[in-house]
Length: 237
Image (cartoon, rainbow, N blue to C red; front, side):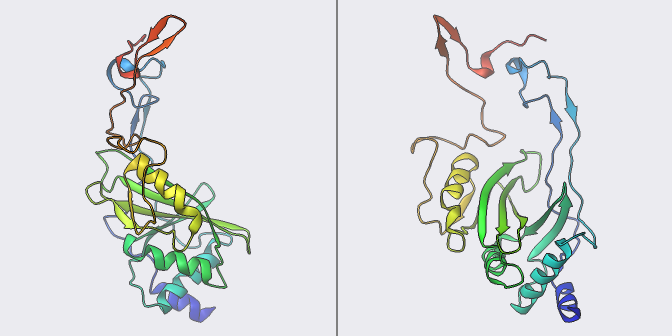
């Protein structure tokens, strides 16, 4: 283990001023502006919460996984910024991974005997809004059925260049999940076997879960009354 520890230090995340950002201030319950907020929570203010980079010891089995991962990446000759940051928050460990090395990290996590994260149980997206740098995040939950452990990977992207490699060649379960994330957030998974819309019509314009996507909506008739779309409803506060 001493050799593994010395090797892992060579690939441990280097602290930089441009650390991944994963939080933004919130105003109101649903982020609605103008007359659309009928919830009564329009005055709610929540500061941005950004989990800080974790420092060793991470605690529990997190250190063992981190040591084995960094040692394996070092043996493959991957650069020091492959893992940009490690965060431990709310009982979960997250590895922020550079998009250029995402596939190598996933293969290592799946195949290394000391890691064995055989299942990608979830792929999802996050948009922190136009005021946040690298606002788009692609998030992966990996499960080790061998060791009964679960970790998160996260890749941060600029909205003007939302490309990263598809992990379907490593984790086939990510197929439909990447399609949904592309559909809702516009994150482009290069190499996906069929990156088409899965929830919205094929000719839909835009990605509905982007923070700058218009709230919009259509009038709904209900028992003779017409309910206007959310952005046309009047406020009651």
